[in-house]
Structures are given as C-alpha cells and as structure tokens.
Length: 297
Length: 330
Image 1 (cartoon, rainbow over the protein chains, first blue to last red):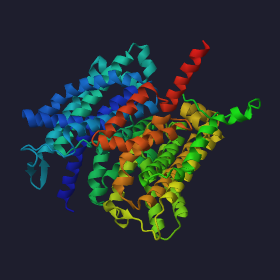
Image 2 (cartoon, rainbow over the protein chains, first blue to last red; image 1 turned 180 degrees about the vertical axis):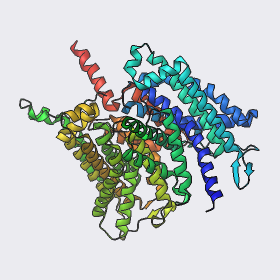
Image 3 (cartoon, rainbow over the protein chains, first blue to last red; image 1 turned 60 degrees about the horizontal axis):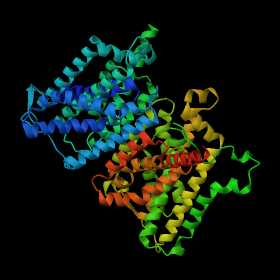
Image 4 (cartoon, rainbow over the protein chains, first blue to last red; image 1 turned 120 degrees about the vertical axis):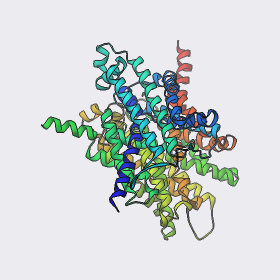
C-alpha cells in the first residue's frame, strides 16, 4: 500500500469522524442531563434523513439547507416528546428499566410509522455533489463528505459556544456534573431537561440528515448508528463533549482501517468489539484516562 | 419499580394455613398443564398444535428473559442471539447424528457460554452498558451468521432427520421445556439467588454492602436464562427443520422475547407465562391484519404499559382485585 493510499484512508477516517461526533453529541446531552439512554436515537436519525430527503425532493431545498432547517423542527419535536412521554417516568442516577423500555417502544413506533409513510424501499439523496470529488495530486476529497464534515464541525462549534456562554449551557453542564448541586444553586431541572432533550433531538435529527447525504436509507436506518453513537460516548467517558470528539475519531479510524484486514460485510461487528475492549480496558473512557494522567502529574 | 410476587418467599412458614389455601394458588397452573398434556383428547388440528407449540417455546424464552430482566432488572435486547445460537447448535448436532435431547443440551450450553461474552465486560459496571451491548451483539452476531459459509450463510441451514414426523412429539418436548423453565423460575424466585437478584434490582450498592456479589449473581442468572432460550431455539429448529439468520437471529425476535414478560407482568412468576400466551396466540393475527404496522402496535402497547401499568396483566389483575376487595370492605 502506498503512502497516498494511507493518507486517503486517514482523510476518509477524519471526515467520517466529524459526522460520527455530530451524531453522538445529542445522545451525550440527553444522557448527561437526564441519565437516560436515548434508545429512540435511531428513530430520530431516520426521521432526520427523511426530513432532508422530502425537503429536497418536494421543494428542491439543498440538503445542507435542509439540515439547517432540521434543527428547529427537531428541537420542537424533542420538546414535545419530552412533554408527552419522558417527563412522566422517574429519573435516577443510572438508567432505569422503565426509561430504557419507554424509549425502546418509541423507537419501534417511529420506525414503523416510517414504514407506513415511506414503505421499505431504500432511498438516497443524489445531488450534483454526490459523486464529485476534489483532487489534489494523488489525494482525493469527496465533495459531499467535505461538505458534511464542514456542517458537522460548524454545528459542534455552535453547541460548544452555547454550552459555555449561555445560562442554558451553564445549567446543562451543572446538571451533568452534579444534579443536587445544580438544584441548590437554582437550576430548574424540569425546564433544563426539557430544553436539553430538545437540543439533543435537534442534533440527532440534523445528524440524520447529514448521514442521509452519505448513505442510502430506509425506515430501518439508524440501528447500526445507535450502537456507534453509544460506543463513541462510552469511549468519551459518557458525559464529556471533548470525549465525544476523541471517541468519534477512534471509531472512525478503527472502521476505516479494518477494511485492510476484514471483509467489509463484517464491519458492523467492529463497533461492538470496540465497545467490549473499551469496557474492559477503559471503563471511564478516554477522558477518564486523561483525568487519571492529570492526577498523577 | 414495585412488583408483587404471587408466590411469596416465606409462604412455607405459615403453619396455620390449611392445605387448601396453601395450594389453591397452584391449582390454576396445574389445571392448565393437565389440559395441555391432555390436548390430544380434543382432537386438535395440526395448525392448533403448531400454534400451541410455538407459544410454548415462547413461554420458555419469556420466562428466561424474566429471570434476568424481571427479577434482576437487567434489560436485554439480545435474547435472539441465544435463541439463534441454540437453534444453530442443535441443528448442527442433530445433523451430526447426536440424539435430539443431547443436541438441545449442547445448544443450551453454547448459548450459556455466549452469554458470558456479553456479561463479562458489562456486568462489572453499573449503568446502561449491558442493555446497549445486547443491541450491539445481536446486530454483530446476525451479520457474522449471515456471512458464515459452513452454516449456509444467509440462505439458511436445513436439518435432515430420518424417520417419520410426529407433531405431538415436538409438542410434548416444547411443553416439557416450558414446564422446566417455569419450575426453574419458581426455584430461583424462592432461593437466596432470587433474593440477591431482587436486591440488585432495587439497589445494587446496598445489595453489595450486604454481601451480595452483583457481578457473579448477574453472570450466573444470565447464563441460566441464555441456556433456557438456547434450548427453546433448539426445540424450534428441530420442528421447523430449516433455520436462517434472518429468521432466528432477527432483531424482532429479541423484541418479542422482551415484550412478552412486559405484557404479562415483569418480575413475577406467572406474568411472563401469561404474556407469552397472549403474544403467541394473537401476534400471528396481528401480523396477518397489519403486516406493515404490527410492530407499531406492539411498540405503542409497550409505551402504554410502561406509562400506565408497569405490572402488565398481572399488575392490572392485582389492581382490579384490590379495587374489588377493598371496595367491599369499606
């Protein structure tokens, strides 16, 4: 394998990591604030994909603009789901049987509403960008992946700004670090949880739109991404946004380079193997390792 | 979550109770078993027997899921893995000339071994790791089995057995396994193991302070549940004589195995059995009438049960009884 091939693989992995990070961040927010694993993650990714698809197919809205539109739409969907279902179940410091089953039921509902509305045929978003690429010498950048990567990075930057510069962001971080402490200093837990759920779903829906530009999709879309998102947030230590970026890079590198050793059809097994390794070797995630290192110094 | 157990742990201590009142709760299940054993007297059609056969294998998987999920509070979405592994192992063994009963046992053993693969890394940690890992493992195993050449890959695997096909023989095998599963469930619920499991469900830290080892307890019960699910898979595979990864490893099988105990009443002895009968007897009708939307219906049902009656059918029954009896007293 030549150096140019290796470089191409690295670039592919990093472009993939951007989307993976955008896809996982919604799950992290929801887990951090409410200690609920959003098992309906895959359902919202799927809805996001169809939202961008319909916007492009019916109204000729550019998919990138469609992703931007998905943020407010899915924000309100998320708030609605929280109001209708999630706020009714008891919360705890660890995910409960009740919350897992409730969101799992929601996933089944979303997935099958998808089947009713769109049937089970695979769809894809094809724009002039889809098959073009930018060539610089022996290295090629697929245009659509660059665009998706750019959108993912911009949205993560905006989230970073919101979390660190607004009162909502401070409340979210306070609840993630210590729920009781947050309540004592006057954070409205219900309200913050509702908005955080909305933001989490907004990111998930938008990420679904981004993924739809890269892959074909059906109402079953998203199940492999649920596991990937979870592996990423476990690698990142469950409640750290910097950890999400690191986890995304690790998973993307592992998946991209695995094609050198394994047939592509075994790729879905990689995320699971990585999860097992992560749980045995670094149960606190990569960020935990980092914290430990800092404590030693 | 509060759960009421119809079979109390210290029931044996009540010396004052008469013979009748002590064994009255066991009467209904015993009658049901006798009726199922005497099934040929009603001269049922082959389709009725098939439906009951399938339902009885479902009872086994539902009771197995409840051991870990109901008593121990560990949600698994991946029981289809054990079911499928049991099915494939039994199929390979039967084709290798091993007697069916031994083949089912081998299937159970392989499923129990596979349960360690998920349990060892995840049960050491509190939190959602186990539940998510089970989603991952069912995807991963299905992908691997679809691509594995020596079991026929995606095109499936056929079981060749010499001799005539006796449907009742399969039926009684499934019935015996279901009775065994319920028996194990009652024993677990009444033993120290069951108490340890319930303690872990309610508060893992408190349980481990009291000397319960959550890791080994969960690992052991997971293996036990996996073995039962594996045996059920083997019994089904021998009956169907043909299995394929999309059939036995399908994610919807894992969903069904989890739905049944929840419909019936999670964490009870008889809830999973009732849930399996409800699901087994109606789901084919539901699929036939709503081929696109049947999971939509079961998903909505799951949400409604979780929000309004987490105790399932058994919980609803207890609530009605309280309403009825309580109303008369006051």
